[in-house]
Image (cartoon, helix red, strand yellow):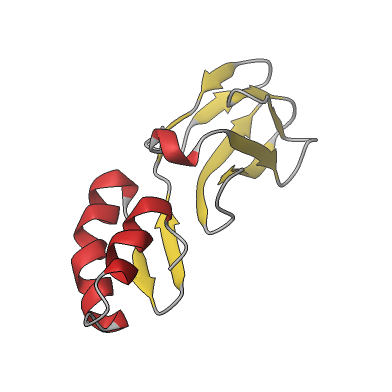
Length: 122
């Protein structure tokens, strides 16, 4: 497990199997933003809002995430800076026509990620 204090709870109970630990932790992780655990890997899905913004050139939209405080800070990236750029705070600016995937990734846990598909028209 690589989910901070939750992992410690599971490993503190020596008689608990990894499968039982996963079953106990999965609902907690889901309440923090989704995801699952499997053995020693935790996958957390960050939900971005809005998930599929449609913009015209020069418009902006602020993306937000359901990331728990323990997963902050968030790194924001774009798949195509000629279509849309994204600031360190999740502010997306439409640059040119097309589509770009904006990805949010926890700086603390590389397994915690989420995406939004931005469509830009002229």
